[in-house]
Image 1 (cartoon, rainbow, N blue to C red):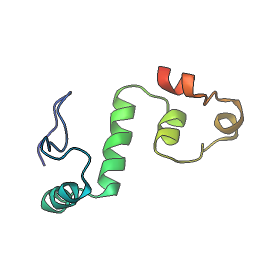
Image 2 (cartoon, rainbow, N blue to C red):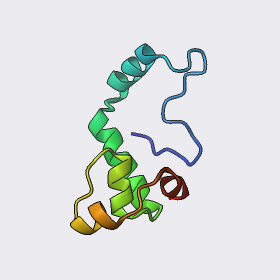
Image 3 (cartoon, rainbow, N blue to C red):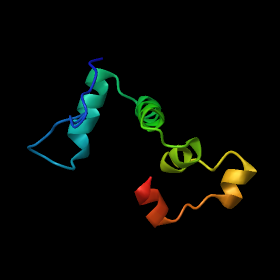
Length: 82
């Protein structure tokens, strides 16, 4: 799979923005699964220096540690800053 440059879209479909069917076709063509997208996203978060506890929240996972669960500010404002 080709490496994506910063600012470059993973899937470009200017004719029908927001349509699911073209994405399904491209997903099958290039072998991109939800797992691959999650792994890529988590790696990008790590590369950008985002703490694990925030990367977990962005991926929809429950915080791993008691510290993260009870003492981390997950407010929308803080998540936007991150």
